[in-house]
Image (cartoon, rainbow, N blue to C red; front, side):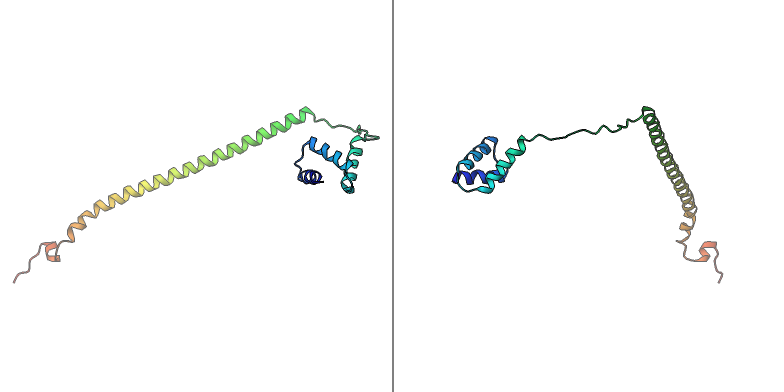
Length: 142
């Protein structure tokens, strides 16, 4: 009885080998009780021996793909892929051109800003003068 319980536990956990399943069937056929398990194993045995009846494979119309349609589909796919690739390339080129133009504008601004700062050097020298008289080198006569 202990061995039957052990094998049933392994069977329900799907851990038995074919030899253990055969041993379980033999032990169940000799033991008293276990009616549900005996019915299950006898039902499995009956199902294993049955052959299907009136099994016919329907002979419907089997559609085959025409090779010319596949050629057309492949051509269209290649054309669509090429068009998409071209569009992506053109967009990248436009982005690069816009970036280059912005960089040129920044360089021009930097150049003009440097020129303006050079012209302001003269005024930096004037900020150290104390009075307008010194600026115009005039002296007051007393």
